[in-house]
Image (cartoon, rainbow, N blue to C red):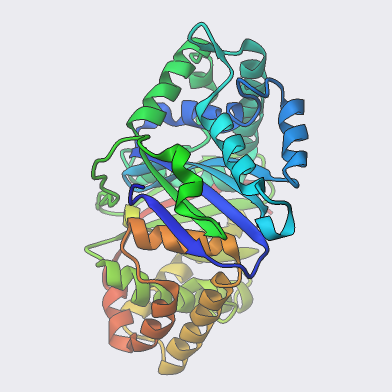
Length: 404
C-alpha cells in the first residue's frame, strides 16, 4: 500500500471517515471545472445512474454521507471527497467492504457513455454550480474579501474564487469535463486520510492510482506601498477589508507566535481590535483578524458605517502599530495561550478537525496538536513583537454602502 494513506485509529466516535484528496498545482482556469466535479460525481455513477439510486444505496449502508469540496492552499489546490459512515461493530459484518465498493463506484466508475458524462446528470450538476456561484457573488462579505485580495496581488492564489465563474461554466461540456476528470484523477497526487476503525487493505481500491510528485505550497505575496480602494454599493453596512503582507515569516512563527499575536490583536473578545475599535469607540458592528500563512497574508475585516471609514482605519492602524512597539502585556500573552490551548483541545474532540490537523502535519509540516499544546507555552513577548514587525500594510478596501 502506498504511503499516501494515513490511518488515524480512533473508536471514540462510533464513525469512520474516509477523506480522499486529489492534490495538484493551483490553476485559476481549472476552478470552475473542479467545483463542477464536486457536484457531478456524487449525483450518479455507472451502477447507480440517478441521484435517487445513490440516496437509496447510501441508506442501505446505514446512512453513509458524501461530501465534496475544493480548497486552495497557497500554490496547491485540493479536490476532496469525504465519506462518513458507522464503524462495522455498529452495523453488520462486511459493511465496511460494501462502503469501499460504493466509494470506488462513485469516484472511479462515473456515469459516462461514448467518452462524455451523462447529459441529464451533467445538467443537474451545472444548475447546482450556477446556484453556488450566484450565492457567492451575492455575499457582500465574501465579495469584499476577494476584491481586496485581487487589488493586493492579482497573481496570488488567495485571489482566486474557489467556486469558479459563470463565464467559465458556459465553456464546459459533458465531453471536455470528462477529459478533465481523467486528467485530475490520473495525474493528481492522491492522499487518503482514514479515521476510525479502518485498515489499509480496506483501501486497496486506491492502490496504483494517481501520480507521485512534489508540490510547493508557499506563495509570497507581493509587497508595495499601501494603497486604498473604494467601491460603492447600495448595502446598509459597509465592508472594510485591510490586507497585510507577512514578510519572511518562518513556519514555526506562523504556527506559534503568529497565533498568539492574532488572539491579542483581533480574535478574542478581549482583543485590541474588539475592545478599542468596537467597544470603546463603537466604530464597527464586527471586527476580526486572521492570517493565511501559505499566502503570506493577514487580513482585518470589519462591518462599519461608511461615515466612520477614516476613523476606523486610523484606529485599526494604531492597534497594529502598538503591537509592533510591544504595547501589550504578559497577561495578554498568557490569556491568548490559554485560549489557543482550549481550541487545540477542542480539535481533539471532533473527528473532522482531527483529520484537518493530520493534513496540516502531513502537507505543511506543522507539529501534531498534542505537541502544539506544549509548544505554545514557549512563546515569549519578544517572539510576538518580532512577528508584529514582519506585518506590513498593503491594501485598504472599502465596499461603501449607504452613509448614515
